[in-house]
Image (cartoon, rainbow over all chains, first blue to last red; front, top):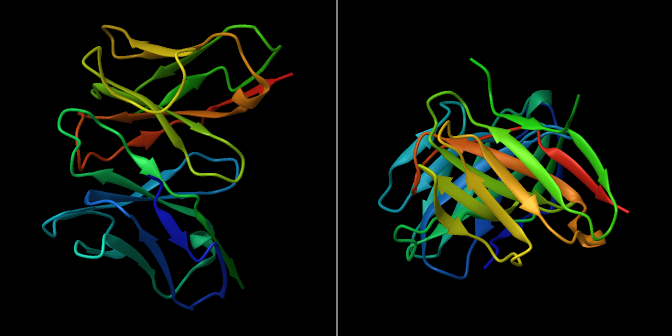
Length: 113
Length: 114
């Protein structure tokens, strides 16, 4: 099932903070975050694993609440370059050797000067 | 190092035709995944291949098929094209399969079915 992202869109001024949320109705093993600028390929930001392990860029922070099957991406002191659509992708715990990453519909972030 | 390369970048096909999309992963990466992205939506998983074997399949009809070659490049084939197949098709490359694997996306192939 597709994870639900909120908000759908957010507008910030440079320097402001934002939180993007991703929730799933099924038990998750991992949450992946990507940013896509218009006309470009999605770019990897972070992976959060069940159990607390994280892999990603130092300037990006995120959390994964395993009990609630929710993840949040924290963007602090936003810069113009942060503008784009943010997607979360989720992997369920029943994957086994079968791989499937399910993306949400995205959150459009616009940072203005 | 070259990133993930996809060809062609744009393609226009007629309903009922067949199309083949190609992807070359990052050197050293053995896994390729295919996604379909409709305008305004997130990427939707189609297939993953690792070491030439299918490791995952999304909810797409049998008209969609793929394969991976010994050099780890991959093809996505779509038969009997429908108008609804119009989308951006993305290929993602990763070192291995499985959870917690960072994926690098190519620029995609924009397919328009008329």
